[in-house]
Length: 200
Length: 322
Image 1 (tube, helix red, strand yellow):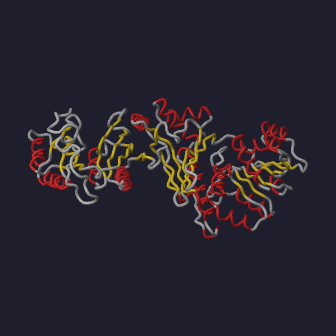
Image 2 (cartoon, chains in turn red, blue; image 1 turned 90 degrees about the horizontal axis):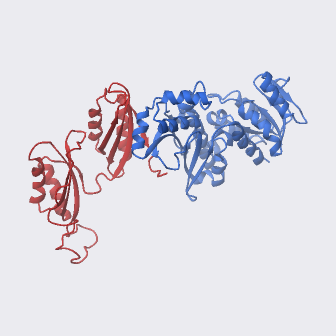
Image 3 (cartoon, one colour; image 1 turned 30 degrees about the horizontal axis):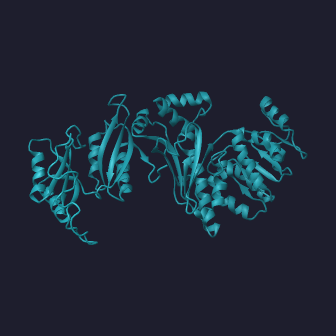
């Protein structure tokens, strides 16, 4: 479900269009550009508005909001993706303001969680507290759990499998995998890791 | 070349049967309890019939075959771990007599590569072992052609039994135990499938490849790092639930038992790979993927086991010995 777009269309402010001089190399661009932040909201009234306020207050131009109500994060919260325009400087101030307002910013900009990896975990997932497993993976600084699919064809007390899509910070997929491996080992679960770097 | 074939399992028997086609002569054959030595060449058909009918290859003692006048000893006894005996002693005897050795037995090159190379250095004979990795697939000779110092990694599917089981589980949505029983009925899996499904067999092949890379790239072989099975991180496919394969398939992926050898590490584990990717070979097929510095990526797939297939690798090695 996508909320109606605000002001700009397709992320381009007509007022800026093909405007002024290209920005000089290096340093922060004074031109606004499009940014995406992924937020995690508690499922309570007013939370979305509270999260959008710091963006507007700091001069961000809201473009779109993708509010995934039906899709909860492993912590049971609701992921929201917000696109807005802001200069680089203002963008940083906005992320800071969001965090100060107590909003969990899962992803800001493009480089934070740049790499995706998928693993399949199997074993007594449910008996060993799947949500604790996911929370602990999330707790490792390198990765965030973007998506979980669970298959427990023989009921919750038997062996089941889960496919996890992880988003890892650039260059930190090895650390993220290591975290998954050690949590799995501790709980007697097995991990089918991707064959990394081989698009074969 | 005159061959002495030690070991009369599927591979040894196929070598006896096919040697003539490749222009070689078998002068001795031994199994664990008997032997036949014929300086003018054995009658392959008669030897194979006798083995099939009464379980022996001839009236001689196995030691007579080792002492026969041959150019190349073909060592095709079952792979053993640890001291790799009796295969290692067979190899040692031949090299000390300045004869060549062609191995189908993985033990000596997986567990005692340094010893094998040291014996070879003191002998006029050479040692070749193409048949130990990937059956019919020319993995080792390709690595030698590219040159080990220009190979950065080798990976692949190196066990047909495990691959058959994973392929069937994914295709039919069946569980491990069910497919294993089917594989045993078809003769694809042995009654005790541990060696294959626990990843040991694939690991031995990766250990051999790592030794080839390590010794081949070292300026001084005596300082090269030697690998044995103990250096391999191995995880098999036993107990993988059908649901894991189903979840992988929903995402366009599949699971294969992948072995990796880099000359520094050896690892065998079930891994997620793209469902239609190069490495996702089906059934009992094997594939070896060689990553090179200047020649890009080479892929060779084919039959990783079987008597005639493996014998073809043995006889290819014999042809390279001059």
